[in-house]
Image 1 (cartoon, one colour):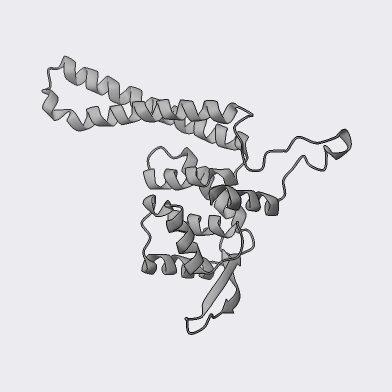
Image 2: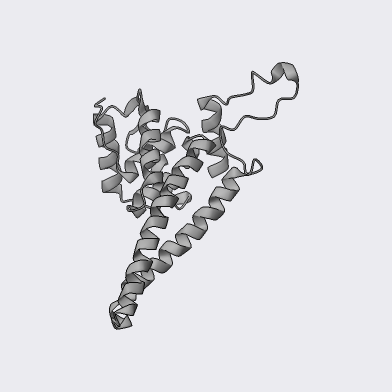
Length: 219
């Protein structure tokens, strides 16, 4: 697998699906549409199969079987390749910090559960600071334009963008508060031990158990 592999948002979604278990492309597409994740990234048969092919070429996914039911075409089942989980985690980290690329951020947010809670809080906090700076700069420019008697009709788009940034900041603050609350469930969090002797054994959730939790939570 190449070290410089670059994931697309759809590619990240495919890898995330395969953290739940081995699947064939038809099942992946069915789940994406069932969960309405195709509202985040447009999914067509052509783009989806092209994405799967590219991921296989790059070694991020591997073929693990071929099956056929009745007269239906053969279906190839795929699994994650070596190192794919870290590639996905790295992509999610970058997406959560990025204040500019909306599609990447939305997919990263949908897959944020692949990272530890504390890391998600840190990444979203960094993104919030970038959004705050952008909002302050834009408000300063709007105030300067108003002081210079620039007609408001020329500032409509900038005013809209400032309002969206303000709403995004407010939403982010609310999410960070929720994430900081231990009562807000998070995949991979340690479960309370039933006894002192079992505390160390249950302090971490295995990747397989985390995938099972994700699969159950997202259906």
